[in-house]
Amino acid sequence: MRRRILILGVLIVPVMALVVAAVAGGNGKALFSEARLIIEFNATDQDIGVQLFLDGEPWKKLKVFTPNGQKLLDIHTKGSFKELGLTELFFESHEPELADLTLEEFLALFPEGEYEIEGKLVDGHKIEGTAIVTHAIPDGPVLVSPQEGSVQDPGNTVVEWEPVADPPGSQIVEYQVIVERVDVSPKRVFSVHVPASINSVTVPPEFLESGIVYFFEVLAIEEGRNQTLSSSSFSTAP
Image (cartoon, rainbow, N blue to C red; front, side, top):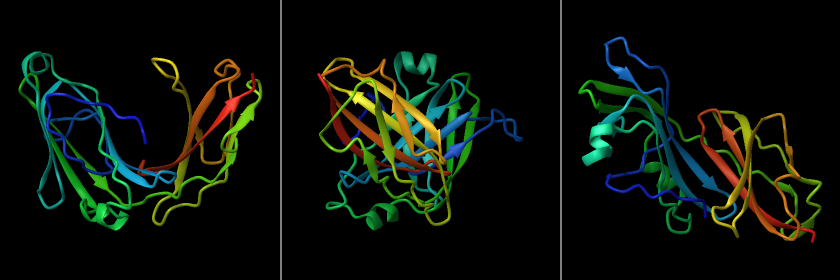
């Protein structure tokens, strides 16, 4: 399962893929500098969920609506958060397995179209944005190396995968490679984004240590920012 972040004191209901940019609208209202809510499919574990990243001027209230006007997200800050406001916000939803909720059922919960975002800044002014939701989901990358459970040279470990075909109506724009050591706290993470023309990444030898088990993921990311990951693990030679 993917990593999760717990946010206290807010009401959160999942939405889908959205991207917003700019800082001021023609109607005088502020716009979010970035608001992204994407679908993430785990091809290895066969589960699916959503992630949200939001950035903008300090706000204290936030709502997100579907194309038919249904409210999906409602955040009201309290106490110190209400006074200071929020700028960056990130969360992940629960990730049900496809055995419990099929892909078709998941997508039916969130129709494609424009999702309106409305908020109120700490100073009382409004902030807004519009997001276009799509159902373009990439296939999971086929991992070539390291093979599951293999022993790697910490001075020469290469993560390689087969290129992923463009999903219908979209295209693969980049890949992300994540390598994690989870037996320490906080866990140690190497993460890098590469263009769609690249299908291998050398893990820096400065990151790897001898005799350690590492977990890694390769994510295929399409132009709407929906992403699909495949995961595996390897160990380094003593």
